[in-house]
Image (cartoon, one colour):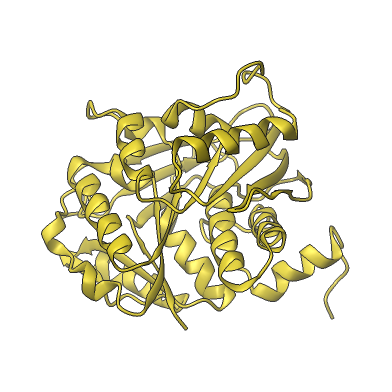
Amino acid sequence: MQSVVSFGEILLRLKTPGHERFFQSNALEATFGGSEANVVSALSLFGQSASFVTAVPDNAVGDAVVSELKKYNVDTSSVKRKQGRLGIYFLETGAYQRPSNIIYDRADSCVARTSPSDYNWSDIFKGARWFHLSGITPAISENAGAVCIEALKAAKEAGLVVSLDVNYRRKLWNDGRSASAVIKELMNYVDVLIANEEHIRLCLDITVPGYDTSREGLPGDYFRKLSENVKNAYPNVSVVALTRRRTYTSDINDFSAVLYDSVGNFFVSRKYHLENIVDRVGAGDAFSAGLIYGLLNYSDGKDALDFAAAAACLKHTIPGDVAILSREEVERLVKCGDSNRIQR
């Protein structure tokens, strides 16, 4: 089976217990997470061969990271050991009208200090079919951004399909570089674009005139036109997948997605009404993993979209960053809808 390769940073995730505020408690729950690592972990759980490229400390912390990835059967042969530290993010889970809050501590991490010479992409991409990247990684540092460009160039030379999840994180773009300029450069290598309406507007400066984007609940026709505008601006993009989320409170959301394929078909997923959300973090990564899996394994774009949306829906029920799901569980939700019958 040809593999999916991704490059990014895996972090130590430190979360307050329950819905407590930062440092209200004298304990924090420690796990690992990070956008691209979440994607390859979920893909591997779906049964897709997946490999993660990153840099971790050359110490016991780095050992723990590698063990975490291997737990999900992710190939770690391209994980580099370097002097430095592991990035950290602190998570405070919101409730009702109080939103969740994330604090990043990623400066001078191993990935922030990495350089293009650390990776032999022609070797890394042997036997690969797909390369996935998110807009988070180039935001970490100028060095990490340079590695992303080298990886994208090598992926296209190797004939891989390239997907990009824009994943704009305002708090990470703090070194004077323009997020829009960097993301636009990445877009020249992209085949499959994953984003939401806001990130398309902020990072690509693409919108649809005549619609009030400050309001939630934009109509489906807006997303069709927005997808068309993206493909007109970037003819190399063959597939545009956009997630749609309506937030009522921190733990009550609606989630759905749309897909515009290479021949102009426009598909809309089921809308999932989510209540009592366990953990929203990583839902977008579950969507990306589901979409990649679907596009690789299903012949129909609607089937791929439905699988991706269902994976994202189910991730809201799972604590931690990773969508710990089997392919069968996701397919069951696609087939049966919101059935909560006990599986015996």
